[in-house]
Length: 305
Ligand code: CP
Ligand code: NVA
Image 1: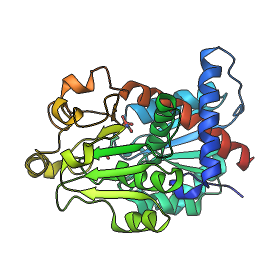
Image 2: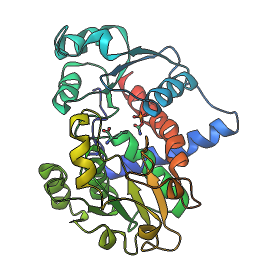
Image 3: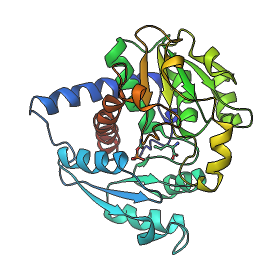
Image 4: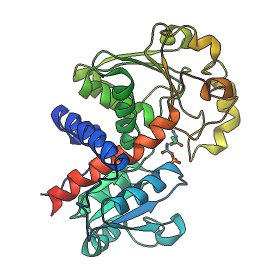
């Protein structure tokens, strides 16, 4: 039976912990020049409805390092659901390639791709979730702190796709998650309710200073996500008090990590000084996208064959 990685809900806690161990091993192997090629002869189709730097480069590079190949499908190439239906695309790709990575607007399209594919589908960001990002972020916190259980992650900003994946990760891994967002920009109600029902420790507040107090990590993302560009001006006003800056960082633990999924808008959701400062692990997060996603591909690829 093929498996997908659409959300953290697709895996048990033990499976996610084992993915994180694999990611650390793959990182060490790459650095020592001893990488293996478990995806030899396999091909990854990469569907992108939105732009990308990190997701595209890390998946393309990752599958290549594992012995496989990739095919990049730009928005104008297949026009997901417009030139032909999502199920038809899923059924065709399943005949040629071994795995699909997709970045979509609608999460429904992501689920449809998975439902109609006989091969694994990996979520490289939808409007609802960004699980690959948060998996790499967990790897980063684990490296820096030695554990995830009980770590307090304070996200300052929009209750968006990255936040929704954090809610799921908090439920799975015992991370304490705080979100400070403006009223009206709360996370998805169902994802939040499910995470709380699963026992996650989550606080949603409107005061950035309160969320940052004593936190192990401060996390920022853009105020305006891809697809929301028409709201940029309204959002700049709504989010003005939700910037990760030196004053906010001073409220967190002395050795708190500064995290951002990138791309960053310096001077908006985070100051350049903090983004480039000594507590910032944003490039570790970006690097770990490569290793964490390789672990996902090896796991799903092995199960599918
Ligand atoms: N963080 C992230 O997913 O970056 P890209 O949009 O560049 O892929
Ligand atoms: N929330 C952002 C994440 C970018 C990686 C977006 O969806 O544009």
